[in-house]
Image 1 (spheres, rainbow, N blue to C red):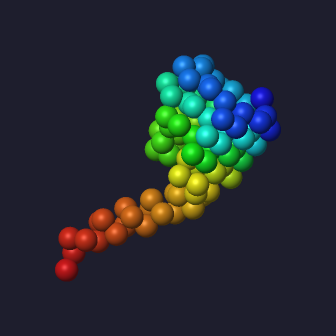
Image 2 (tube, rainbow, N blue to C red):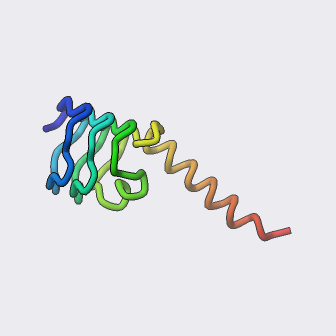
Length: 95
């Protein structure tokens, strides 16, 4: 399924365990209750995907390298933003 066009697809309740979804267009796909454990989502487009979160994908997927996350950010940029927010939170109490 690598580089597949699954835009707007109904993949609700689908078992996609260890699926090769590299470069797949999953924009606006319904992924509610889909199981993406160990799925390779490298370079996948997940913009506006339904039923998944950036955090959930990071926890479950084998790889998200170069993926566009549901919020529209590239995975690497989302990670950097998360680190920045984490550092800001750690520094909030120090004066």
